[in-house]
Length: 147
Image 1: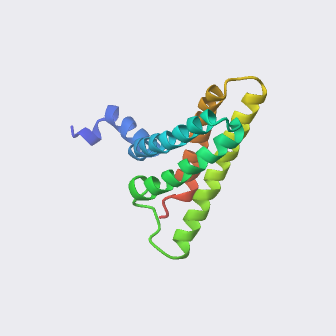
Image 2: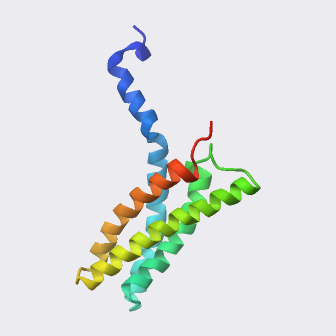
Image 3: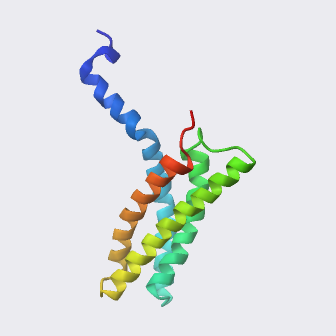
């Protein structure tokens, strides 16, 4: 019996295809790099006595630029548009998804800070929420496979 004919091996392959696991792993690495830029900037701004919510928003913005560069060059290489209106559309959708992530991040960090939480803990919660939201938007809308 060939490996692909083995029923026990079919469900993992289907699961990997369904969730595009390899792309998700690459996206995770791109997100980690963008997060390093984001968190590094956030912590520097906090140390400079910048208020938590604006510091979070500015830091996230630096992460957005990092994420576009990595996503378009290493994660979604097979679905990124080359030039012209489609590329412009993808950039606009990417920025839109980033703004949703930025809004979520700013609301969570600002709300946590107002509630008396350590802004760094609020930022950790915001990271999880923003990662999930932007992955779904980018994989299903911005860089979706068009057959």
